[in-house]
Image 1 (cartoon, helix red, strand yellow):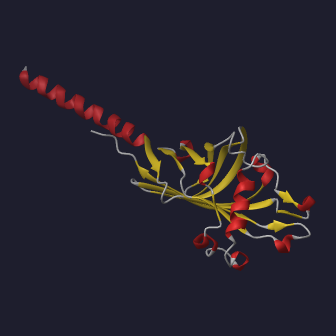
Image 2 (image 1 turned 90 degrees about the horizontal axis):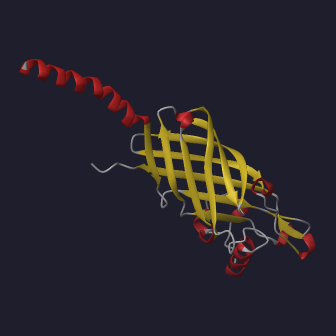
Image 3 (image 1 turned 135 degrees about the horizontal axis):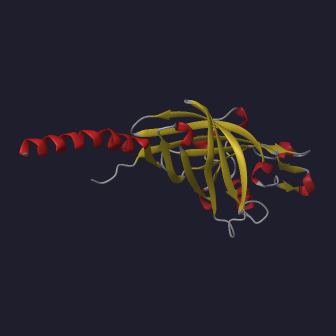
Length: 220
């Protein structure tokens, strides 16, 4: 009787093992590494007086959020958040990564003015909307090259954009990188203008990003 009981116990454990293994691998969570993740937005001057404007690199190095990777990659999802106040204008090291259009330093006064205009009520309106949220809704294509359909909450309004991404996925790390050209209107914004429109920011913006996530290991 004792041997029979022991055999049943072993069989029950073996029967449960595949289910437990499947559950543990069904979804893996990664936390965004804010130090390793980076967003860059390239902006060009426009208008009759564009020669007096600057080419700008707007960057954000404090992205937070989580990435949930499902057993079926198409069912994976992520939520990201950016603090608008942490946007940086014309980091010299990042400008050096771009084309010759972005060569040279921008005077501090111009950087300060650009940031003030960007955060003001006519654009990102930081006083009322201090955060930007990005949440995926679907993933299309096959790894490593996919299109991610995401909802961006900017100025309290939701906008949906499909973004191409190249994804590297391991047990311990997930990296998504890519670039896309978008108009201001994709985020419910209008280009900044000055001097009655004689000098403005070109409507087209270039977004370059690299999001790095590290595996969240549950405490035993």
